Image (cartoon, rainbow, N blue to C red):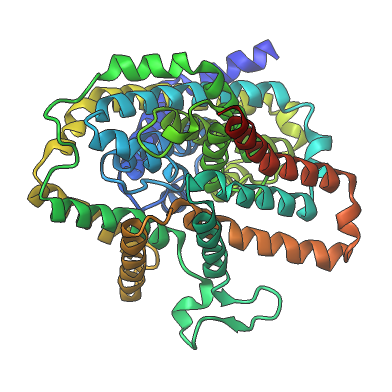
Length: 491
């Protein structure tokens, strides 16, 4: 194993492979910085250029390096302008943007990058340790277990609703209803599409996120006629944000573990990992009422999870040939084309390629965080630009990101609808995060429920793993209620 690890490292550190990794890191960081483009889209564009490569190592360095760092750079738009740079940075908006408005953009960014680095290092370590032993666990999970896991995620709606649990529940239900728009996956019958072919594929998550969080903040800035932050400095700066991560080291480790776990389960996706970690932080940390108001823990949890999730998604991809998500499915295609065969061979005859992936994940994350740290302070000054400069800039990002959903003019109309909805929810005190979470999980819930019923009828409800997960769901719902009752009684 030591020899394979050295072979993998030396293969990645050749001039060609290291150069390709740097190219991948730069492209991945740029894609993360620009909202709406998406890592999978960029990976798909790159595939034709690598399919005929004779040496697999530069291909690993380029594609894995690109995939590993998108969530790191996506913190910039999420924190500075309340526009998610990627699917994995949606939860970061809740506290990151609130910190930026308070004049603590530098602190939020440095905490984000440090948490991303730790998550990006923990993930590959877990990948290395667990590859040989997790095959039985992967095979034990089927559609029934995945359905309960998505149900578990939806149970977090109450946690994300602050002082308005009823409004949060209704918003979550609305999100699930929005997720049902399109063709029924079983019968092909239209649902809420009104004969419009554009809606047959459903409503893009990009449009929902940009409309709910991007445009309402622009309206707020324009009506207040102020910059994002009222203070004229960057706050406590980088050192405080770095200290925050180590001060909350246990939360960072737990959130990183959640990210690896979500990535390890094929099909859940990066848009789930950050919400799971954020909800876990709200549930388990003290002074939870500060979440959503600019609490640095609300930045640390999702950022450490979304980076560790990337490494977790390579566990089923490499060990079993089962892609952990869209990005790893594309990378899997490239691997097969250049002669790498994911499966048992990755733990035996092609172990050096497995280590090459692990080394790339580690090195790429370090490079990406170094780049982001270097440019964070000047970029963070965007918080102090006057509203007549920053509002048009944000709107440009929002429109470009929205149009990239399908490259259709109707995208902009749908974006406008959710912008109005987001503005009204913000104005009347309705939490927007539960609605977005409902859209994220609604489609997956329906798919796994349909597969479970089709394959097992109602017998899947009695599967031991399903029963255990149902117990955990109930515990996660009842535990916060018990805590609130205990606090009320003590008060």
